[in-house]
Image (tube, rainbow, N blue to C red; front, side, top):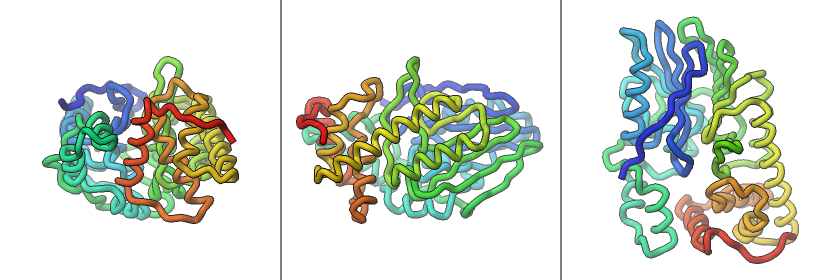
Length: 330
């Protein structure tokens, strides 16, 4: 069954955030900026169904004769990128470094075949069906950016400036953030996964890192002076919410470094951090396998394993009685 729905939040001065109906893998926030002379998206939903819904909601807010001519991609994960296919004539903007992650991830149709064809009696097959089975990429063609940049990119949309800044490797190797000075808002992409007491989110998942870079990216978001921060996933934040998220990242970094120094293997380290239960409201604790694994690779100087192996480790931890783990902290 396809995932449907999504809330549109009016952030003022032609800026809107589209927030998915629930938390979970693949349910990313998107942005729409509208002026009398044009419109653009910041990120896209994961599959054509959700992207089509976002497009319908966007068109309701467009002035007569205005089309969505640009898509700014905060990073190349499919849940922020693959929906651009519903805008076949739009310019798609990404960092040059995003190419690395495009080649790392499977294509949409490869991922659809993997989810549909995996054995549901195995931990990986069960996990993929449960968390990705609601998406449909069977007819989704590969999407490619049309404009790559490095560093800073200054755009305008009517009277609105749009400041696009590439970031050092953090969530992926090709992250960027979008600052909208007139709206005093930032779209951070997945360097921020948010959670509040009223709307709990999920544990972040970081494929690149190190966590020092993720924390520094959060500092860059705060340095804009924006009042409103739209994260890659989760509810819209104010600066205080970003600082709370940075405290989470610092905690995970400290635990990963301590467990690495004690000689604890990466997956076991993730199990131990999950077992500490420091952030019980957050969903998908098994994603700490990815983030801690990325941190270990920077400490070890080792290479990134294939995405299928990483997800197999994630699924194995989730399968073990809801990620309940044994063993005390180092």
